Length: 194
Image 1 (cartoon, rainbow, N blue to C red):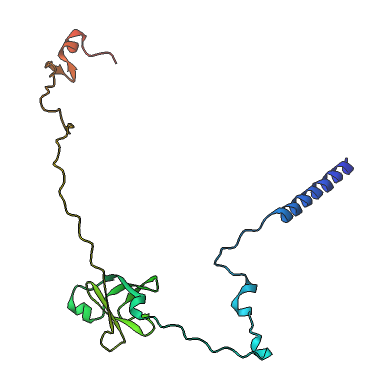
Image 2: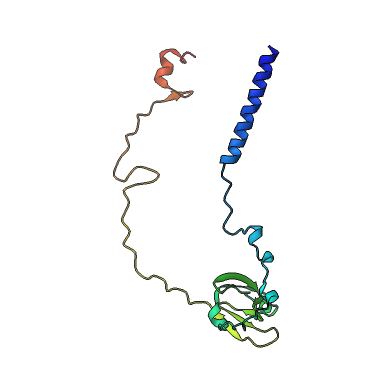
């Protein structure tokens, strides 16, 4: 009996081992998100051997300068209502810089040296701190409302809260009652059996 139990235990362990290693070899790993780079492909491990081998670096070409007004677009503003709050430097603007929308408070850096100096009801002023505004971004004018007229109202066939006009409800004949029972039932033999 002990020999059979030992053989069963050995075969059970062998089957478990085969199943474990079979799953390890046949299972596919989860895919990495596209935004994640493996450690071997990171920029920190790349080394420029050109300087070591005596290669002369080419003169860097200056990137073409793009005017700030074409890169910035005002999407929305939260302007203070009172002049005192506006002088205190309150307000927030939603400004798109190179296609990326950002929320900017008055006094914060928008791009490079440009700061948000003032926010009005439909505009935002940008410039260097302590100087006159160098650029004013304006919101696009609102779309004109659709004008027209509605069709005349048509009376509804549905009457809420009662009978439609012109119909009479048949009233039941009034039968005197005693304790909630019609008088005829109470006179016939007293209260009904319970």
